[in-house]
Length: 124
Image 1: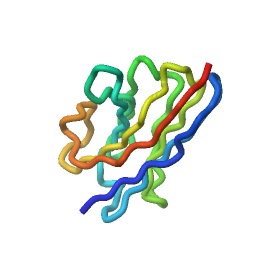
Image 2: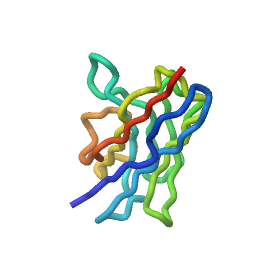
Image 3: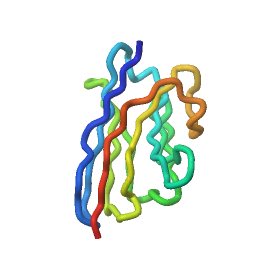
Image 4: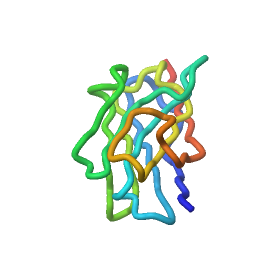
């Protein structure tokens, strides 16, 4: 059983930063590809960022490129999403997801395990 727990969400003003964390229990997280998603209004989970198993490949949605950074802390079995220069349109619930079956993916349907989400609210 893979358990993912997100943390780090909160309320910040535009331009400020937050760091989200996704901690895994029950598995060695470094062997999983990990992604972050948010349920954009009226749409299925929108891709935000992805990290390959090895950590050598990272990909970002155009809307967050240059502002967000996904990284892995193998010692803590955790993946982080550093979010800088936050904008009001970044307001959403952020979910981390993991899969062992693929080396890397940006497709939400290909992830097997999901966390419960953490709320990020950015005020203008």
